Length: 86
Image (cartoon, rainbow, N blue to C red; front, top):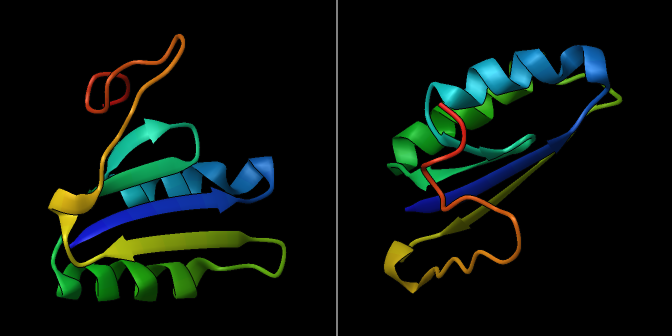
């Protein structure tokens, strides 16, 4: 399944989310991560987020069961997915 995860958290907490999400997904832009994962991995991610979630944190998880139907168009001064962050 394809997932796209974004977060909006206080600056002092971004490192926590970045570290958690990099274990499972590709880091495409500051607070945006994506990847093809299993349903079990998604549940793991959701549980880990629940464990660190503070009242000021917002996390959005978009998912699609058919990753082949998700297209990515890169416009402007942006790198292709997979080439920017490690």
